[in-house]
Amino acid sequence: MTDMLPVSLLDWLMFSLVLLLILLVLFVLLRRLWRGAPKQPYQQKLLFSPESAAALRLLDEAMGAQLRVFAAVSLSELVELNPKLKKAQREQALHDIYGEKMDFVLCSPKDLKVRAVVALIDDSLSKTDGRQRQLLLQQIQDTGLPVIHLSPKDGLSAAALRDEILATLKQSRPVIAPAGQGRVEPVLSLPDEEQSDDHNEPRFNSHKL
Image 1 (cartoon, rainbow, N blue to C red):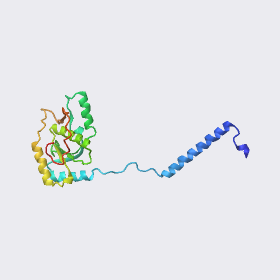
Image 2: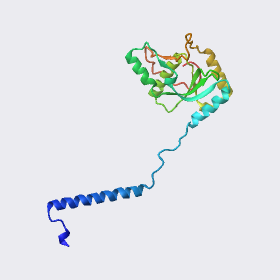
Image 3: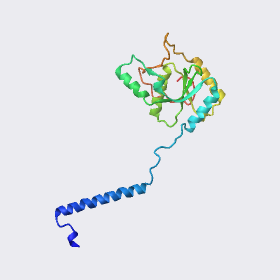
Image 4: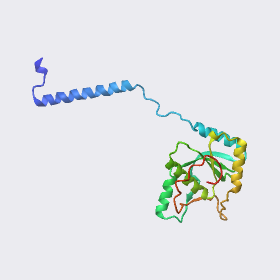
């Protein structure tokens, strides 16, 4: 029996390596058995939050066939940078709209031209984030694109919302396309000065920011 045991340092090293390899194989096998069968890597999630779903139903009821409602549209699809911006300003403006989406976009049903955008009021934002959002929405509105602020929690009726939207559209200035040119993106510019801290997120309405 003692003849089978390693007698030299090299034998001990070989024996240790073989033992370590066996333990490693056992560990991998046991880990696979413990994990079980491979699981589905994806699962469904809600397309709309309860607040967004309520707002969408309200908008559809308010406007009917007058305007088509599109949800979660990227800001980069709605505005483009002012070509007169300096490099640093362009980088800042791109950073401000990167990954940002408008909650809803209202378009004419025939030509699908953007008539207005809808921003849901988010009470969860901090004061700083709310001020930055306010500034961004103001810059969007400065392009001539009306911004409507909406909170389904306010209990606004579809008829009242319809009146607000139509009144806002009448007050907005149209963006005129040059002759022979198709779709014209509103141009996003940066303000000369930052807004003061006194500007807070409006509780509602579609009035000017």
